Image 1 (cartoon, rainbow, N blue to C red):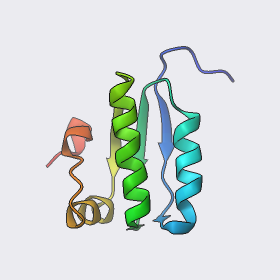
Image 2: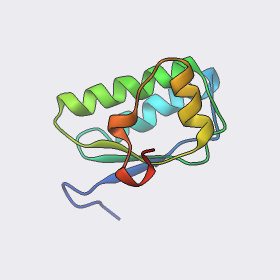
Image 3: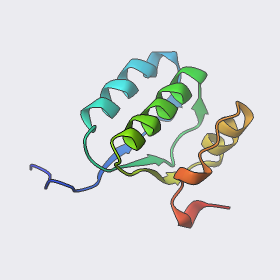
Image 4: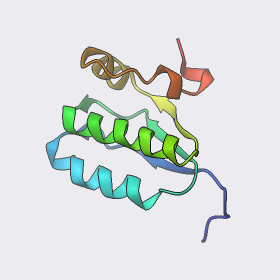
Length: 99
């Protein structure tokens, strides 16, 4: 079924975001470019630096396109790992999951 123009699309992240998953993550994000996107990171157990970089680049690309890029759900492991490596996604989190 085709999505309506302007409709928010979603992307559920894999449990393990490592080097093996990086190219798949990039391809999935690029396929959603041009519209609002909601990232579901609720099932993430591990995040590698490469996938963190792809997510940061995605947020910047959506910002440049003036389109919403938000995290609607995020696991503790996802948030803590990003914080540990110095990536701040607080401004991208849905209000319901901000602490």
